[in-house]
Length: 133
Image (cartoon, rainbow, N blue to C red):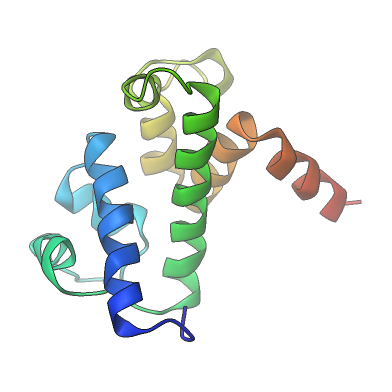
């Protein structure tokens, strides 16, 4: 993200926060989900909605990539109904031990993001499994 302009970084931040808002993620949970530095106040998310870009750290950008990947996979899974993606994120699922995908992400952190993305995006799951061989 360091090669992006500040304007582009702010625009990308708006998209990510909008996705998380649509999934029903609270501000304090957004701080956790995005892997923001310890002690980041939840009110910081309001600044991300306005004019501040997310921190350009490897940890945050990895999580941003997974959030964007999940959002894209939801869009292609439910192409005719944009409300189904956020609904799916809130429904208990056997794949996640009867937890919701969102709870899986919030409780398991980065590994939860990866698990949800791998479940939705077969290309990502295939790439991930090939990397482990």
